[in-house]
Image (tube, rainbow, N blue to C red; front, top):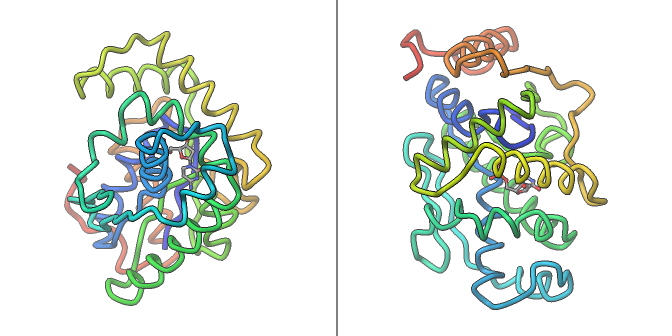
Length: 234
Ligand code: DC
């Protein structure tokens, strides 16, 4: 089990999926779960800042999440919402929704169940989020905290948005990334922070493949699964 935490724009999702692939492990994108609840909140016409209403809705949200690193699927009430949960409306509203304690309780319990299931079936899992090493699985054998400078993170987010057909300047992306970091780090319930025993990895100057090589080394030092497969990460 690898816990991969850190703010947005550090390459977490790409790194987590490739690492899981190399380790022949499962993969869990916990941010996508908060995004699906947020989409349900927006679709219900609820104000994301109305914590009581958000908590009330959360119990009934029917979300499904896949754990394949090649094709993780995201479904809300049976509908594929993979693209919509990455859109600007959800990105803007996800921080207040994920700060609601009841939402966190529900999703953390669900995440622990999924992790236990995948560990039983596949033998390993890479889990990405903000509180995996601190709250979800504090006894994870490997915890990594990815960081990158604000400039690099904004540039990465902006090019991801552009690639997905959404208009975005680096300045917009920087404002969005910094706003979300501020909210995610200052909330009372499980704020974004590195676990004391997490290994910090600054990805500002590293390619994705270099990050994978570094994490594969860490994973093999900890004796995780059979280590990374020899094939280069693609
Ligand atoms: O990783 P992401 O950008 O898809 O995450 C979306 C939001 O969800 C992020 O702003 C904070 C929240 N989140 C969280 O609170 N805890 C997690 N384990 C994962 C994400």
